[in-house]
Length: 111
Image (cartoon, rainbow, N blue to C red; front, side, top):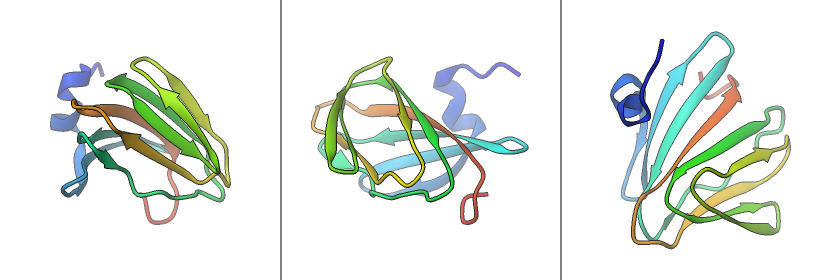
């Protein structure tokens, strides 16, 4: 199945929405593809996955990502690997939405 990026939010299931962001998931057998639209001036909830790695692909905007205590600048088309047991949080200091897709194995609490 081909899903154009602009259609992801229509095909995915809305799993989080508040004043900071919207998150849409598409579930596969063992993986989740998750689209996050992080609004200008906002940050994601920081979290750690003890047993799951993630890959983030930034498709729009620019910002930064905190990996444990190291902050990295991210731009459109950057790909970041987030190892297991790594605290991470994304920041959008810009004036446009920061959009990224994360791919990760299903885990308890995110099925």
